[in-house]
Image (cartoon, rainbow, N blue to C red):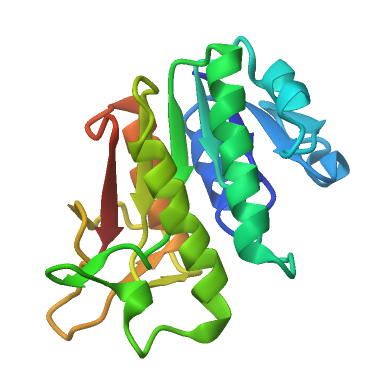
Length: 212
């Protein structure tokens, strides 16, 4: 496929890029520093401001899908920045006429008990609260879209560097835990699950989750 990857040099985006390229996809990488991807075969690195909806739409036009790994981790106003960014991504995808949008979600909006989301529990780390709230709002925005063909993939509670095993479980709106009560997934296997969904859509207009 000919896809756009927003945030292709980030923590999650870089692994999504590796996985997409390994499977032979052509990637237009939307990044702040295109020079970081100089020399990568199969990649066209493009600088663009995610908040510039018109400019972003021009970059997205003509592709088969948009994969957004956009995040506001480095911003002081992380919630506001993330929500403005994902709103722009959604709008630009529609304006550009790209048929699919896949979004990197968070674990915070997954349920740990009926009606109780992880981000609302006392033990949720304060430093990730803004990002988690932003990702939850992004999910709400996507669910409110009347026609857009979207998918959001939420990781386990712990998304960490590791190895690519290709073995994991998929869920829907509940936090997945293992026999020891741990909720983990490597960034590499998260990328496998996302690119699997890109190639073989099974969660259209829905959020799903991945964990070991």
